[in-house]
Image (cartoon, rainbow, N blue to C red; front, side, top):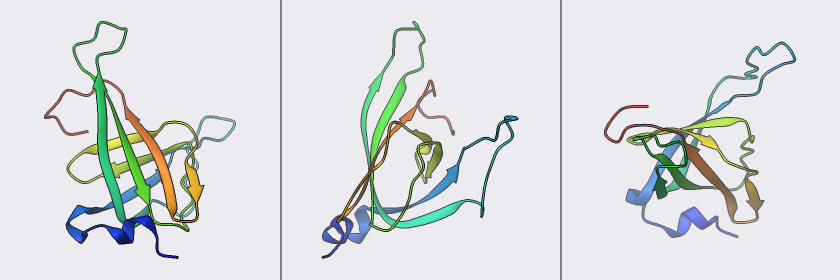
Length: 114
C-alpha cells in the first residue's frame, strides 16, 4: 500500500526535522540519537487564534502528514522550513497510510522567525 503522501505532487511535500523534547526526572533534556529528518511530509497551517490571554500575537495550529514508519513523540518539536517550530499537540495518529500530527505554536508574531 502506498503512503498517503505518495499521492501528492513533490512540490507539495516538505522535509521536517523532529526533535524530541522529553525531559528526565531532573528536568534535563533527553535527546537519544539527535534530531531526525522526515522526508516527503505534507504540512498545512489550519488556524490562527488570539486566545483568551488578550495577547496581540496569535496561537497557530497546523496539521502534518508523515509517511508511515515514523514514530513522532508527543513531546517533540517539529521544525518546518519556511514556517518555524511547532509543538506536537495531542497524540500523533499512526495508521497504515502514514502518521497524522496536530501541531501548535503559541504566541509568535506573524512574519518573525521561530
